[in-house]
Image (cartoon, rainbow, N blue to C red; front, side, top):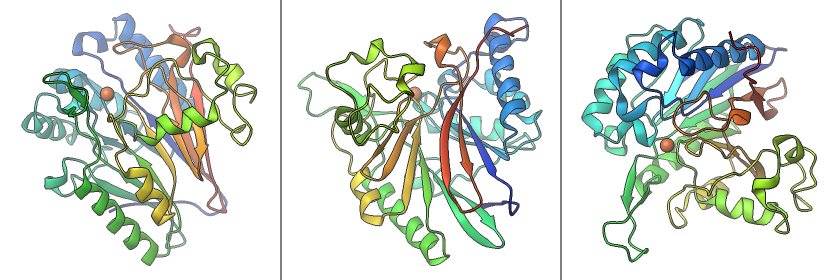
Length: 325
Ligand SMILES: [Fe+2]
């Protein structure tokens, strides 16, 4: 378990970044995408002044070593601890390659990470936020892997997005039990691939008379596109929820333990909705930078603020490209 201390009477701010997915040449200072990436990171860090940076996966295409060698120092220069978990693209060329990527990133001073039990994947670990020696909040970082066979589609060799395994759900339950025993009453689960419940949440929360693609980020914050009971939702859905193809059982475990009140995922570059669903806020992290497919209006990061009473607030920090030099 990794521990951070929150100063009493001061907010603890976590800046979540996600899905950079840039190749080494694109990260060059002269490259248009490299410029946008640096502008985005500089703006976010300056504005949010985070105590901790988390990254919900897909740092580079196919675990591109050269890209990671540029990216690590780019993050380290802010002198703020940065804690990643892994996305499908960090491991789609095998775990040996991911292990080498981890080694490359670990050369950076502010890289903050634990591998966790290797039989569960890579990067299943806990970050505890303490105040006056008590854990007031925990971040549960988990590995949602890459792809798995889709046994239901009827298409030969069809591959679906992966999910947390049964063994990982058991690990999650043990961690929550341990956190409860230490007096910690609330946690946030961070993953790359969304859990299945994101699909159910959007279905019940969004006004089905509207087309999600017609809603702007500004409109999403006014409440009108959300059904009664979900008016505190925000963010947009411009693509399908790319989760495992059927219920993964994660949400049942979350509800059973009644400890995790926030889930944050990455993976879908043009989804950023956040819905409080059956007592748990399910949030798509805002994509950071222009890697792979993206929408210029959905660029930035997601800020999790832990305030004095342990209260959590989640919001997106959008970065416009207007001031890019
Ligand atoms: Fe992904």
